[in-house]
Length: 403
Image 1 (tube, one colour):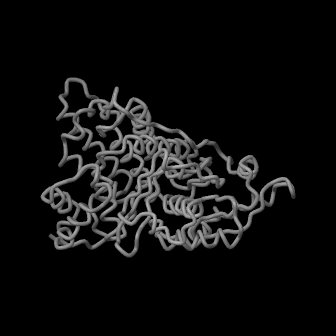
Image 2 (cartoon, one colour):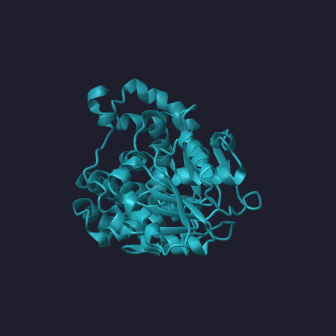
Image 3 (tube, rainbow, N blue to C red):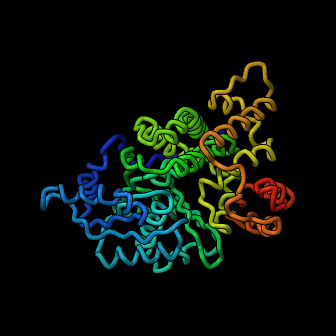
């Protein structure tokens, strides 16, 4: 853990939590000086009625007292593809929008971050900003983006509404690229559990595991601080108590609210302890190659990576074990790590998640092809792994039937 060496921690996004807090959106935009707002979401949320639940709020505002809803953009696909970012930015320009409202999961939230960055920088192609796969901007290179931006997450996993990271898929090189900038996140976030109750159990489960992975990788990071540890540990506690409740009863608003707040804290810890993130490294590479949803990839890789890189998790495994509700009395670090991995696998099983990628038809030969992708992913800069380890982890997530 960092003590007296340099670190940074920023809580820039104002967070409004609670049932029906989406009703605050027009007034919040008015306070931010917005005049013309575009809603960005996806077709699935349109079909689920979520987009209407948000857009109708603008109709309820007294005429002339709030911002105008200038348009709704729904053609956002999985993984915040760069072509989606570019098309969404063009739509915002065509509508004369001066404010952005993101409603959705991580793909939508990251797409809108890319739109904001493109508008701020005057870009027509977001790929121009990330030619090497990673753009890391801090003070004084990073500067405030004066585009009112509110995010409403509809999943509890990525926490993208508050993170200073935008993960954008580059279709040309099949890589998940990253923009890290302290002003790219939303000015305000609305955590409204009412908008998550229709999320299917399977998606609830793997997005929850994304948040759990954020917290565990933050806790294990050599760049962790007391700030990040506090957020990471409570994230783990909340997920241990609430994930299965949310999976088994999607209308449990208390569990949904707890998971939204856990997701928020988990990504905050992750973003400001960012260093050794091997689980995300694998998830990014496999997600880009095989189009596996990010949270599902993290869920499958988390216990596998922890088994094969124990030295990364042992220093704080006692705190991790306690946060997961494990009785650690009279146990040494190695024994606690075993119980932690066992508990994670049990949570994986009870929430209906797979132990491998059976549904994605990954072959033994494919695993060899992933070595380069894992090594070239931007996350590998922080924690490079030898080819033998990448191969071993990959083999562990391939179904036995194809080996």
